Length: 183
Image (tube, rainbow, N blue to C red; front, side, top):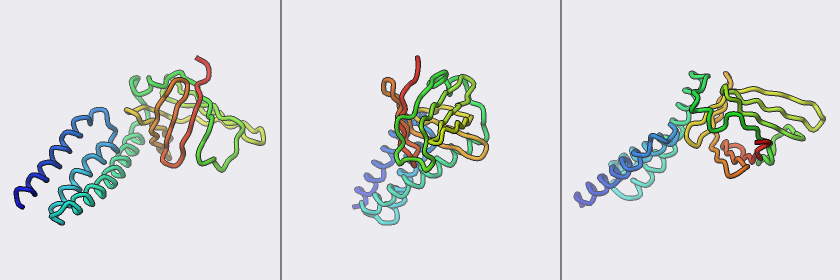
């Protein structure tokens, strides 16, 4: 039985190391999730000495690692308000119109147009249901498949992908579909 435990521990360690090899393209929340799952699995095995303990430890570690990594991402974004050329390039000089938001925002709007600028700012012009127009400017940067949007008082980490002329975003609270406007 001791040999099986060592093999299971080695298997978990190898999996963590294998998954960690892709960390160069991961944001800190993803790296935290992978590392947390590995450490949690090892701790779960050490405490429970069984597969259930290993799996529970991996699950708890995954969740905690993601949360901690996400908070580090947010802290990093607050400290560093300016983005590098590489971090803005994927979206720089593009304009998008919101097609749908799920769940619907409390503030009803007629249209919402977002412009990602070369200087790392993003400007959103919203026409509300009553016809009033609001404009908001935030900072942005792209890290892997995460779009980080921030102002001094908040940070939003949103998973995003572009498929043709559509952009799909998931903030954790909202799923957003946008259509490219212009070229």
